[in-house]
Structure formats: structure tokens, C-alpha cells
Image 1 (cartoon, helix red, strand yellow):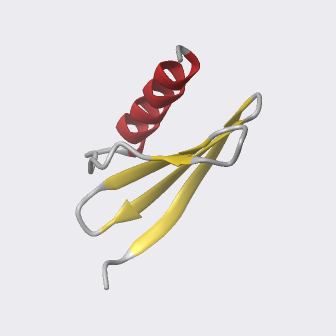
Image 2 (cartoon, rainbow, N blue to C red):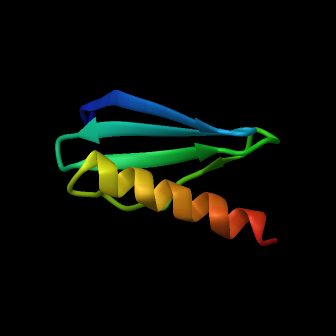
Length: 64
């Protein structure tokens, strides 16, 4: 089982971003207003990079 520790929860109106640290780096998940969970499937070197990727997921999701 892979190690995973929640390190940040960020919010934007109606959206929640969760950042977790794993053995390999940082992962991100985005919770949409309808409680769908999105993730980019990537491992990022920093939590800031993971947060930026999550913000990109929000921007992309709002366009549709």
C-alpha cells in the first residue's frame, strides 16, 4: 500500500482542492460543486506544482 498524507486543503467558491504527499511526490484532487472528484493522475515535485495543476483542472472544467 502506498503512503499518502493529506497536506493541504484549498478552497475556491464551490470547489475544493486536496493536496497529498506520497512517497514519490505530491498528488492533487479537485472536488467539483456536484461532488465529482477530478485528478490529473500525475505526481508533482512540490505541493505548489500540484496546487497549480489542480487550479488548471478547475479552469478547464469551468469551460464546459
